[in-house]
Length: 165
Image (cartoon, rainbow, N blue to C red; front, side, top):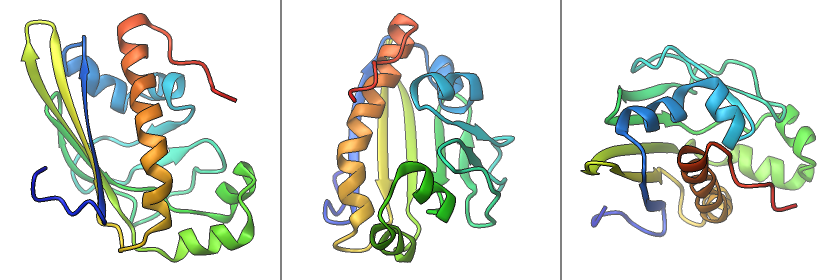
């Protein structure tokens, strides 16, 4: 993390009272992601395989939306989702913002899962590959902390955080 360019990347460390395998399951199991993320992911979770986001207007396969690394209980990395017209419409995104997001280079997210004690796991989330001045990066800086907090709460209590709206 020390060599990350904060102008083109986001990183966040979360400590969770959960096993590395349980965190892996929460990141990859459709029933789990539906609970704390509000959407599901469809993949066989092998490097190079397609990764399809389903929910909020997402659901079409995209050849550039793939699993980059997958080591159960240790590491997961994939390209960030495609900003489709359906996604923009489902989320009420203004057309100008949609055009701006769709024109940006594709980014990627990586989760490193590391045991930190008998009942504690360290989850390092790095979202990088952004162009300088990226609008997506400015948006995910607020989104990831809320999402990772919901993941933590879900794993530790069985319920995700309530929607703040």
